[in-house]
Image (tube, one colour):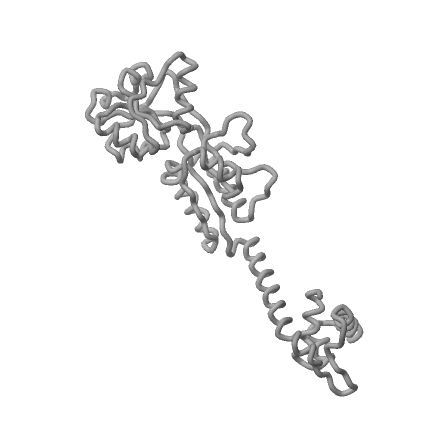
Length: 300
């Protein structure tokens, strides 16, 4: 059965008139008759009993009628839903982002998106960097926001801005009065950092290792919020991406410009190559890219 055949069957069954059905469907009598004949031949028997004056449903036609109504309604609903998704009158888009980005820079982006497409649902997964990459790789989300992955990554990366590491020190320490501090000075204090395999930890160790410098790790944690509270409590110092400044200051720590060396890394949007984005995800991706071009993200 084709949709065209079912629509023709319904038009005749509801009016019990080939002439009225022709007018409704904008078909000639011969075209409608051929369509009904094709449906009957495909099913193996007559659906209508016809005389020169009357048209009536056969018992088989009676049994097909409610099924045909349901099938056409489902078809029309599916067609309407897809059309609405393509025109962004409805739909869903899923994003994974690092908590620091999700809590600071993502809301203004989503505000722009929702202002244009209020009927599209957005789901945000705030996860550590490694999990963001994994969710994009496994196609659990369409878009991810994270640090640029290392060489050999299978993901496409569109940079948004460069994030730079800053020093985090106790608010009541002597260091808190500095406007800038170098790594050599910072590393004289007990260091608090994220546990491996955190990207932040790996980045620090790789950059400092290249300069024959080593992190004097005294305390470790899985969460940046905990790192901030440990520093604020006077247990040591730390270094985090500038994106986390608000989180550190809320914990009571002080953030200072960090120099010698400057450690920075691009943050951007991750997608999986070879997989086309949904209409909603493509628009959100375009907003990310346009805002980056306008300079809406931090600069140092």
